Length: 481
Ligand code: GLN
Image (tube, rainbow, N blue to C red):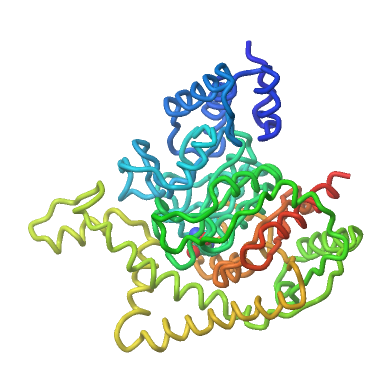
């Protein structure tokens, strides 16, 4: 019998302590997590693939290090789930799509390499919307993910599996990707912490490109500290991604534990229009808590917010139409046999892509086409600068911004899938973070009257994740008392 505590209660700190005291081994943790995850997964459909062999090999390496008295990595023995848009060598990576259903990548993403080097144990690959396009995980070719907090509800998207797995306890931390809110919105819906770092903070090498100028890899955890630890380990310049930043990575752990007395916090008035009454009350209570902790909370304005959804859907579809051109039936896996080359392209893409992906490719091709480029794409790029400028102006006066993550808590499976516009509006408060490239996160801040989790969104200046974590960590501690 192993002495591993119930898997859903594990944290990075608890695993470190247990390994140090020889209460359990890394193999014990990996085995217990795999058993629990394989048993519980049918409830949520969060995992698409388990990687038992890779997990046990990695856990054995950690146990050998312990036996030899060697230095242990920061994530030694920590079960990690990886969104299935992030490539893993020799381990199927589907991007939630039929076209890559059998794709086995020949290399690992930089983020995964860095986490494994520090001892993380990859348990498996997590379900998501096809090519990360969606807000509910209903666009996966492998069926929707169910929200562990209410199984008839969506977990949010597109990193629905990554949020659900951490909430369900089938891994301790996970990786997601965020292009327009896909980490923060599912974190909010599932009641876990989700972090979208500054654009360029984490290498995108090995992340299947959706909209390259907006794509981020970021962590999920059951608490702020775990998510921050994962970010710290994978952040930093990578020669393999020219957009990855040289900025130094802080040691978030000690910095986040300083108090937040006197911190200037902005509350953007535009983020409170169209908010459900329940969510509004929960966010107001959270800001009151921040005041009690000594923050100076003041209303601010981010005046171009109203253009964000339109701007985002022009830029992301344009970039997606170009990025997804590579899935042509020649490279990768699926190929539909046809008489001519162009028919082969058409048939492969027709059979391989789902409806939402096709919709985005068509929209993106349209906004980039001659004659429309200036009217749509170029205009959207200008609006994007204005949105970024809103944040720059605000951060001259405040150190952090707090807001809701989503106008409403998790909705029912099937409720919005027939209505793309209403689905697109779920991202109204999150896409500004991606468009401007500032770091942002969701930290649990309460529950709706029917028990659905609600997250508080925190934004900070470019590369100032430390302040963001400090605010979130202090808030999290205050929520416990
Ligand atoms: N829901 C948004 C979309 O469908 C965001 C997706 C994302 O962040 N990957 O594009």
